Image 1 (cartoon, rainbow, N blue to C red):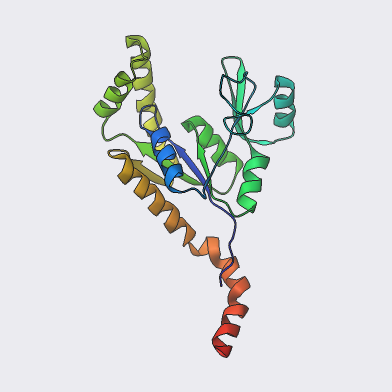
Image 2 (image 1 turned 90 degrees about the horizontal axis):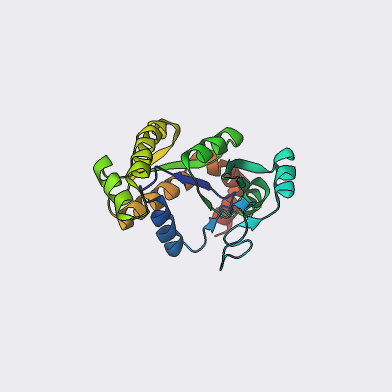
Length: 212
């Protein structure tokens, strides 16, 4: 029997409005054994937010200490608060054989790629730029100025698609989730990922064949 190996780090990102959050939420509902990476932040908890579930909340001093000890796969400062992905937390889950979803913006994903050799990078695309614009409008939270800013940013962000391993068009959420599941299944069959566990179990397989 082939032993369970190290889990997969699945990094999912895409332009605002592409629907990466919706896809990740539906994927997690269908795949209960997959873990979701929890970010750290220096901002104060909002009502209903739970430590270790929504975020790891810490002071700026604690966050800076972790930066200095290289304990983040990526981090950024946004509106005077820090946000980052704790390396030790992700590593612990992967070592336990759990697959880990990291939903993150494009700049953060590129930093993760710089800081680790592993990772399956998936870029979520809208069916069209017109559809992307409509999705942002439908949120009802954008002024004309901020809408155009987001739309121009999306055009620039799509240029980074060549940095990713896979692209999934989010036309229908269920189909997009099925494609994500297929990507992960294919990655788990790659020889360079499973060869060690095959070699480790080879003697046991031969033993079973001889004595069956």
